[in-house]
Image 1: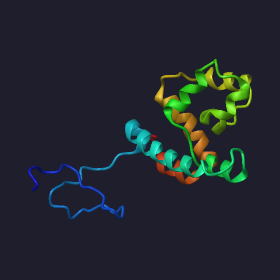
Image 2: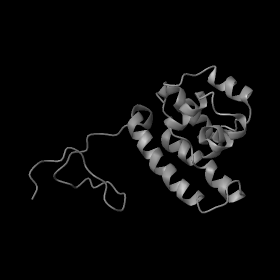
Image 3: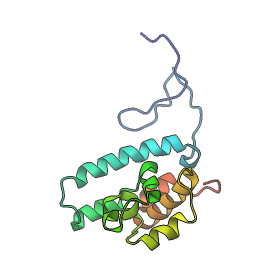
Image 4: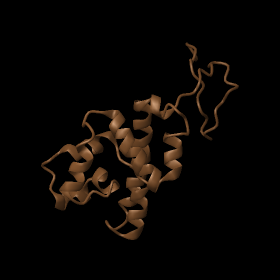
Length: 149
């Protein structure tokens, strides 16, 4: 029994927007750069799927690296860049370090000198750089050619 009215249209199981839904109204669209929570949630789901596939492969193998390059990194993983307790020998174990190809303390310091730990825009800029180079389809999804992004 439907006791209320939906505000938004929902996507069907096929991923197609059901614009014929009489219970909802198409409220509009937004860009990922305007919805940090939405971007984070979609990226978390994407990363979980990539990590599930990577877990079946030997760490450091060519296939595992190829999948890792498609991964990206979360805001929490970005914040690890500022943890000065992480030693160079362990950088490879942290997704943000590995995604940004940070292998030395001097490389890390060059990056974190210009950015802030709690700044989502700084995180987005690093993520954008990473995805543009290694995952153009995901880059295009999260950072469409729009002057505001």
